[in-house]
Length: 134
Image 1 (cartoon, rainbow, N blue to C red):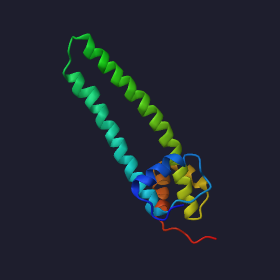
Image 2: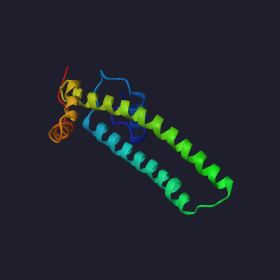
Image 3: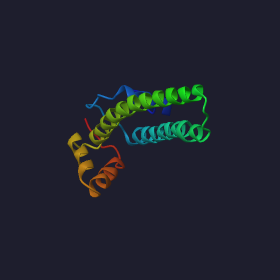
Image 4: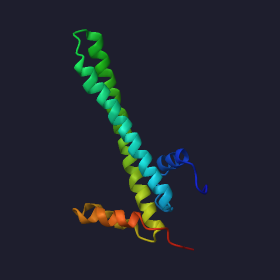
């Protein structure tokens, strides 16, 4: 494993490690990856905005415009679905690896289902420094 990889490498490791639950992820790598995923999500939402609202606001009766609108919408639905599912698995994996880094079981991730207090407890755990381990 590379010590202090650059942010783009972290993003690659994030998506490649979607099913790696037995490793550890330090605090720096975890938060950089979460931030980059947030930026990617904003990008997708921006594209959606352009396709749905801007294009739809300039409605045209031409069939070509409608077909392009339909095509781009379909492509964005498919891309968003595939990206969303892969990101979901990758997020679960990086959360479990982060919990392992602070010497907690991955089962602590189930706290996300406890309303209000569970996500706050997880956030506090994610902010803890790495624990020394053998």
